[in-house]
Image (cartoon, rainbow, N blue to C red):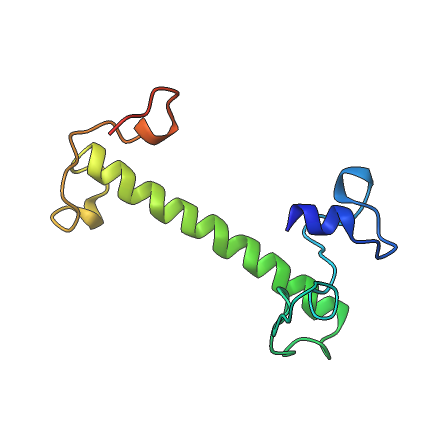
Length: 109
């Protein structure tokens, strides 16, 4: 997607040059093979929404992402330190390995 947004000339500057982050040109009709849906609003549910409603939806989506990250972090904490998240005690099995191993430079299985 990054290369597509950089190569496609839609009159909008790239986000590193002052454009809107996350704004991609439409895929339908702009790629060399048939694409049935666009990334944003594939079924056209929000094409008639006001800008205010779209901004509210964007804030809600960002908050949902933040909540999901907190939830995953809670599971990670409970696996690493049993009893650290009382709600998950007994639900999540303890993990004795290195949880950050996939992010280390010498990651091997």
